[in-house]
Length: 194
Length: 289
Image (cartoon, rainbow over all chains, first blue to last red):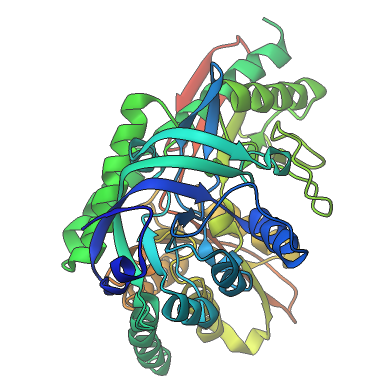
């Protein structure tokens, strides 16, 4: 399925765990530091210098190169999403993005926020940074570059970024939890055989 | 060319090779994993990985945006010139390739912008193997490094305890270290040396088992068990959770059994070079052993 931001509540609520997708349109990178700063500002009642509503948040710290007046993305695969586990539920509630792109999955708080506020988690292959860069048409801007290249917020224009897999949907289902249950059963058997 | 300049040139080339191309044994391991997987989700992950590796090599750009922190193993001469050459090489490679500047102060989180900092690059000096200087570069990303585990087991835990430690480490890591991974295990020594053994283990090419038959058997058994967990590529389920388990061991205190686990992502990047006394340099991505 070809998803394009801005996404509506209806768009994301029709998606189910296991669906394949690509994403186009505007997306914003955000890692640990950007999540912290955005939440701190919002809690103080200050507006962010960018609008995340109905957009996609990409857990990614890209390699970018100066290209004349602008920027060029060299490599931009996903980072480990679980580092944002404690921050994401409030982040989704305050800023209302419709999609989170990352790798490795997220915990119960985020799964709950996805269900409540209409957001999906899209898994992208970790390390596939050059495939990702092919799905990024350009850099529309950068915010908070004082946080350093990986932690800054890069405003990206996506052009069929993918292949993505819906790994957390709006029904409270997570592909990682499904796999986790099977893994637990397998590990129990393996340990009994030791 | 003076010594430091020769080391600098060598280091820049090692870093470029390592971040833009995968060693052949790792590529072969990924293709074998694709053959073993039957589920479509797992196959998509592996096909994307293989496609990505090919695209990175042909475009001469880093295959992963996390170009890690720079780790070096140097055997032979331990001199000011070697250190200076490595430092200058890292700073130049960071700018030229380019690499992502990942090195920050641990408290203030200020990014140095150069991948150079206090204790970075991380250089391990070893005893000389011959009349040459051998330098191995391994970038280590945080996704895999953050999953490291050290357990100081009771000696009576034995092989069972070792196996449980490795299984627990890999299962709790799940999809986070970008599986199918290479699992390095350090057994014995002390707390610090066990982890260094685990890190050295992941430099060993896939398919080359330990020279010690008992350790080689443990490597085979652990690989089979980890792949039976069902974690699969990127933790999305499948038959290939690890491409290989590599174990290094050292003797330890009669009252100790240290076990360290250091995981490497599928992008198991590494490159080695030997600099000879006449300034000839030989490069290998699969080591010289």
